[in-house]
Amino acid sequence: MSADTVQTARREPELSPEQEAILHRPELLRCIQCGTCSASCPTAYAMDYTPRRIIAALRAGQLDKVLRSNTPWLCASCYYCTVRCPAEIQFTDLMYELKRMAVRRGLHPSGSPAFYQAMVSTVDRHGRSAETELMIRYYLGRLNPIGLIKLAPFGIKMMLRGRFPLLPHRIKGRKDLERMLDHIAHGREA
Image 1 (tube, helix red, strand yellow):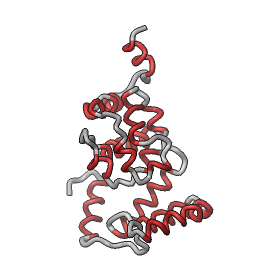
Image 2 (tube, helix red, strand yellow):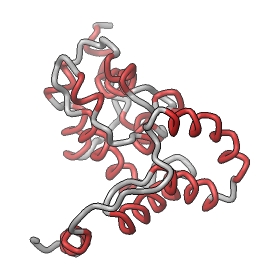
Image 3 (cartoon, one colour):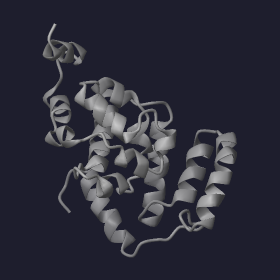
Image 4 (cartoon, one colour):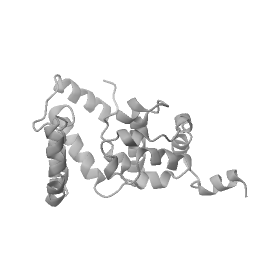
């Protein structure tokens, strides 16, 4: 059995054009598996598969495995992976695509929609992510205050280093952002 046959055998049958487009992204082939993305990711420690392993799984045709993982949902959208990638892979944008595809296919880990709802709520209120409020909303929304308590030491360290503000900062022009998001949500141009 040739290497091509082995590779084909692992691929999922009957992929849609959208799924094929994800699996055959030219940038995935540029990845040299250096691990810079995973080392840069502030949430990699909590992911099922690190960013480097996500790219390896996609290259191996394991889209279903990737869509069922918590990795796209834990992406902090900080763009550290993208900025530091020597192959200039737009990893954060890929995470958004994977997230949208997982929702459409109903393949997401439990709790992911709760995190998404908490994130949307904080962005609606402040015009940007407010990490402290986001974590509080997420854990209390899932009725898991113990999880919140377990994260407290990490949160305190982040606050002491100035990486996790206690009070959120609102952006200027929140109403403009709200109008733009409303137009996007309803399929209209801004």
